[in-house]
Image (cartoon, rainbow, N blue to C red; front, top):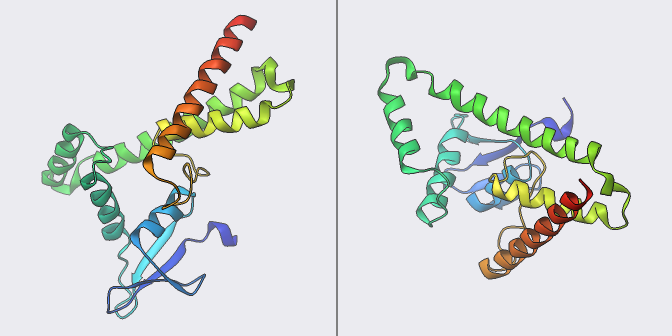
Length: 185
């Protein structure tokens, strides 16, 4: 297995501190969320017992983002998740969620491929930079579900107003690109 394909091993010490075994330093939940947004799989294990704690920490990351007002999961979806725990054997929810996210990632990849294949503007100077911004915008709108998106910046870089301005710029550029494409049709 290639180095990039192996999950990043994070060890939790008795003090509950999280240790990145690749870089030999301590990390926070936000750091781990950043690794995941960058497309890296992580595995978190208890140093003493060897128990896999990955699921517990991923749920904690989601809960913290939701509690800060970064609502991604609508209340009805959260209700359905809670209900799925009441079904003997867990029901079909885990398989459904996995299939849904797989289809979303595949659709996102196909959209990017099709945009490259049929776009006559691809020969224009500066198109690559515009395409990269459009890809970032699409990934931002889908919650960064792609495997390569690392977000508008590293965690802690810039404030929300700067990131909002960046998103507004991307939206304007996307609208301009769509306008140009409609003229070509």
